[in-house]
Length: 235
Image (cartoon, rainbow, N blue to C red; front, side, top):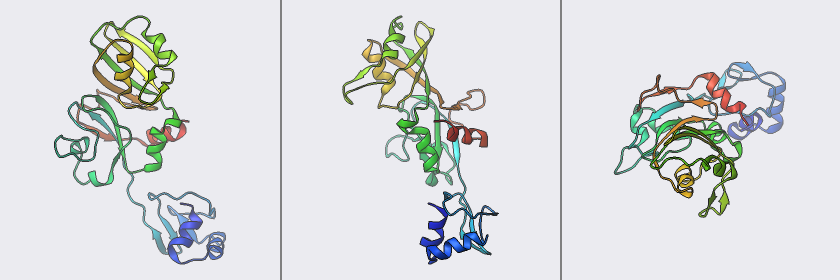
């Protein structure tokens, strides 16, 4: 919401009066005078008019979680444990998932209460790279990288995947970089070339890198301010 609209819509102030208050320097955002009525205001900002607080800043949460196998990417489920069960109870009601992983898939997950930030991280148009460590049942054929670079046809969506990058590590293991997040996309891509994924682990989402040495499976941490800003800086 823009600052001028927050002043007028929520507090019985006309738009003309709101503009006057801004010009007079009587409005503060996070304790700094703000005269720009077009400034976007998030729920995580404090807005004051003179000595009256019009909006109290709520805490922003940006969490990196090392997801273990066996947990659903969901906020609740009657049968299976979810990734929220790995977090303190007081945080769970406020968070949503910025991207999902299959129950058997491990690795990097991000949870937040900042909807604009999470949409930037996960929206298809942002085209942020997602890196997966893939283990396969059969040896990875030499032409697999070229097939993935050309795009794999997904019949359910009737489309070609965007060019992906494959880095072979061993005969049965590789790093795969994709720029989408279709349902079961990595497994379907390998199935299309006659192979089967036996283990899948997400290592990176855009600028966010999971550090297994720092986070054991099931552990989480707050993202740093640099990591949060790095997501905004990517296009």
